[in-house]
Length: 567
Image 1 (tube, rainbow, N blue to C red):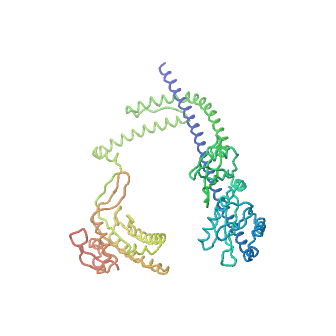
Image 2 (image 1 turned 30 degrees about the horizontal axis):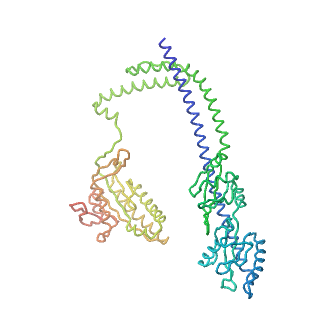
Image 3 (image 1 turned 180 degrees about the horizontal axis):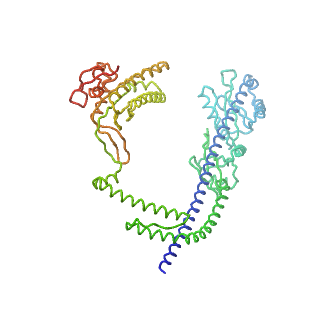
């Protein structure tokens, strides 16, 4: 009876586990898809709003160029100039000429201003001084430019306009008048941009009392938009019961309240196609839970008894009994688990046998170290030949070239030098700017390490000469290097921290190699490759090298005998 109760408890737990996992996966999938749909919708909307903003700016630039071209044609027209070459200026005649041009260039607003900025004539019967305020600003700006023309945005008769102003010279170079043209930014402009960019477009006049100039939104939503107190940082507006992703762009106004263009799209409308997919996933989630419940019931009946057998066998293994075999003739995963369990017990038995055998060959402490060894910081003493090479005056040389050319040249040089080091059995320890530190004899011991280092240095010098010939053909100055080589006993191993290791060598021998490289800068030695006596002796080459005498390098009290190995 107790076993039966345990079986029922296990089956219940398994059922709850399977149903719970299935529900968690399905719900997580639903939320992940929903979140991904929202993210994609926001990305698409922001991209479309940015494209619409660029399109408005491009249209404004084209319209500005068109208006300036039309204004310059008017200013250069013979009939227009004749108005100011006769004895008495005729305002009615000028208005008639402007009306004629209005039909030709499709510009609702054209004005003719005197050199001092007051109105001479216009295409509208009633033009106030407030209406002329933007043109006065353009007039002041145009007088300060070499081209004597200006453009911008402003309000005319309460409506936002794109404005241009050019001089009329009669006779040149005297400014007889100024020709101004205005193109309204209104509902037509908003509708045209919406048609091409598929976004809602609104133009507003800012200030203490914002006003709607034009909008493609329904009137009730447009009224709510005005109350939003929009600014350049606004990215979301709540209109009606929907969230509208927004992009607000300020328009430079020459006179009057600031103006802005609001580009928007409904997030709910953008998400509408995705909501259908989310509903399908939700229905699938509920159906999956129902299927999971029935599947879990059947699976629990099929799994519980084999699992009880596995648990009983585990208790035997825990006592150290590896002799028993688990007999579970099944062709499913539980059968594979039983086979793997038997293989594990066999492996445990083999491990104990190896441990006992190793304990008989070496001491128990050594056996434990071999069985539980791990990577750690530390190193060992060994004889290594260290080669240091550095470019001469490379910092001053690099100041004459752009950074990209400096990097390309440095990579070009390091590539050739590194290939030579590796060709002679050396290992690049590190690059230090334009300097190279190479090892011969570490991490793997190499026969003739000192000879290999000297041979590599000589070939590096020859390779640099070849590179200089190429640089000369390219019209670039030549490079020069210095190489120092020393052989000595150093610590080679893993240096660094517990989480990041670096194989390198440290010790006085490394420092001496670096000091020898620095001596190549001294003109009294006349050598590009300087090696220590230890390296020369290790290479059996003291009789083949040019002796330079003994020197005391920085950091050492005893003098070092050095040799030149340039040839």
